[in-house]
Amino acid sequence: MIRENLKRILEQLPDGVQLVGAVKTRTTEEILEAIDGGLKIIGQNYVQEAEKTFQTIGTRAKHHLIGHLQSNKAKKAVELFDMIETVDSEKLAKAISNACQGTGKIMPVLLEVNSGEEPQKAGVMPAELFSLLEKISEYENISVQGLMTMGPFAGDPEDARPYFQKTRQLFEQAESLGIKNVKMKYLSMGMSNSFKVAIEEGANLIRIGTAIFGERDYY
Ligand SMILES: *Cc1c(COP(=O)(O)O)cnc(C)c1O
Image (cartoon, rainbow, N blue to C red; front, top):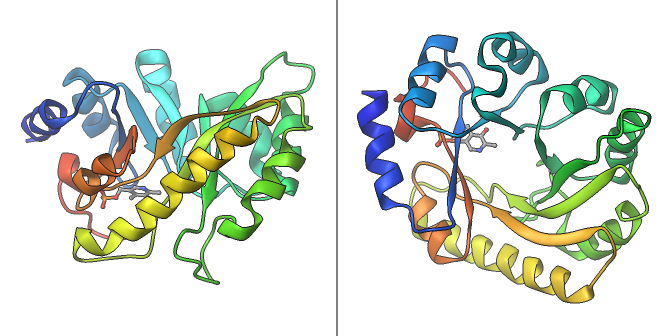
């Protein structure tokens, strides 16, 4: 099942679009099956879950953090992940940069944008994005490489399109500002139901769980 699902999705991806397998709640066996089937990047929501699977998976895949990170877990996150997609505050950026200090690591991060401007959700508000980028660019052990967004939950993928468009615009504007240490290379948006629309709107990283691994029992 997992292999066939993965094959079907990978076949649909245009050149330059990379797939992140969202593995929350999946077993190590399921994740390994996906990696054997050609999955190159796994997306973890929780540092603790990542720690569990990391021992087995190691460098067989890249590891992206796609869930919210608490500053007090920055040190562990920096050890485990190749990219943190969910930076949304200066406090968190500073914690990540500090955690890298002395290790020589420069952590690639994306800024998470709250494109639906929903107060209860994670992500920086669009109006605050550029000033946050300016501030974060001062931290030497962090490299901002793009933007990530979830968008409001939508049953119909067309309902997500305006939020993807908005994030794409911010991505292009941010690049044109030419801030040091900031390179707008990755645009992470689109999930199982919306990835086709996201790709049409410029996504080059898509995060897919259900369409690879099947329905989840919870969250
Ligand atoms: C679970 C999750 C996804 C994938 O969602 P599916 O609908 O299962 O494809 C993508 N991004 C994040 C941040 C997630 O938590």
